[in-house]
Length: 115
Length: 113
Image 1 (cartoon, rainbow over the protein chains, first blue to last red):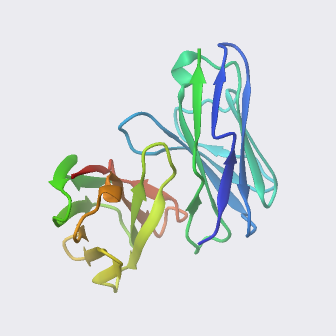
Image 2: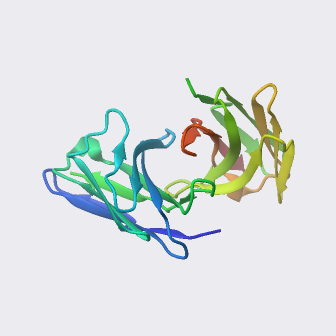
Image 3: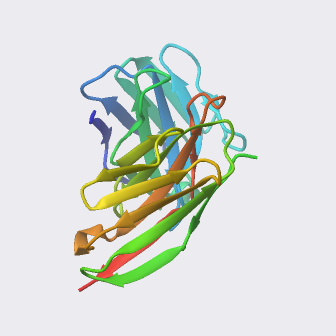
């Protein structure tokens, strides 16, 4: 299957700082990427849908000014957690698909810990 | 409301034994159903994908079934191995949901030696 990478795989930051997470599709062009958050022992929760060249669509309850998403190219989407707080500590996973009819491929995830 | 339920929530089995995980969904109109394996601290990895017309699909020791009439699916794992310890997530796509996924809560499987 297609490969999706995330960077970094884990990050620890101080409260109040911003953290950027990258999601890359390595061997295909992704017109749409998705960002998920997963808390311990829970399933993935969709945060936002990112389409290349346009603004992201956020799920209800997700603050768009806090979780900034940029999908500037067909192979890269970034999620920036601004002014991070301890409650933002979670496992963030991205996925990518190259057309509305193809499978989503998930990245390996990024573990964020806010102290 | 589109929902996916899974049972059991967790399961412990001995190495070499078989097990079956269940998934019920209310997603409509149905497009396809996927089973994913998620190791702790990793992203989900696809095991099987089935459309409306498919009743069963295998991937090695994993066999998924689908009954679109009763809106149920199962994942059968044969001759379990220690490496099968993971969360297994049932994911359903709706045709009118932009191919976005509706995730089940997952079943956490522990295989003991």
